[in-house]
Amino acid sequence: PLGLAFAPDGRLWEHEMGPAGGDEFNLIERGTNYGYPIVSNGNHYDGKDIPDHPTRPEFNAPEITWTPVISPSSLIFYSGDQFPEWKGSALIGALSGKALVRVTIDGNQAREANRWDRGQRIREVEQGPDGSVYLLEDEDDGVGGRMLNLTPARQVTGPRLSPGNRRSPCAPIRPAASPAAHAAPRDRDTHRRPRARQRAPARGRPWALPRR
Image (cartoon, rainbow, N blue to C red):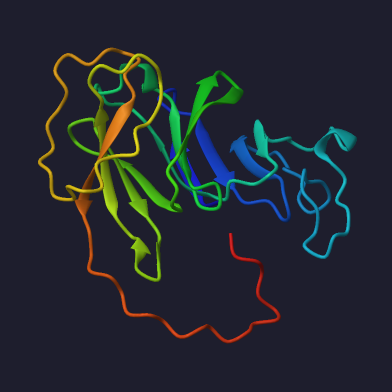
């Protein structure tokens, strides 16, 4: 698994990348078989079919699958106070999906509640001690690679994520005054590195899996 975390009720959840399609979010249960590579909601990279989970009900099917894939990278369960409606939700960073994904949990069931496009591959999601959320971007040839701090936005009427103030990378972090429960987060670029030198093209690796 690429993300593994306990929910507030003590149940253990994980997410993992599927093959060509079929990324999964699973509840971990003792003594169960999750079926791969006999079943999957994706296919082999060479195009060969893998039967879907419903064809073999004896295997434990994922609670959520993603096709097209999001390439999940990290997982936390939010427990802070800055985003009250997020409490108990799973927050997932998406690499190829270039997004922050919120998943709500109800017993053994899970569903994707929100997906906020960030325009960059999200490598890590963490909760700060003040209840704000930190995102770490991947860097590619000097683009991205920032650490962003998400706090509730003021005067927001719907659950959307603002693109952030990219012109003020070192702006101080100030909590919003009396944020509404549905207020969407705003981001603060807490660290920006100088532009990296141009890297030479990597040599071909015919055996390598496609980059997520």
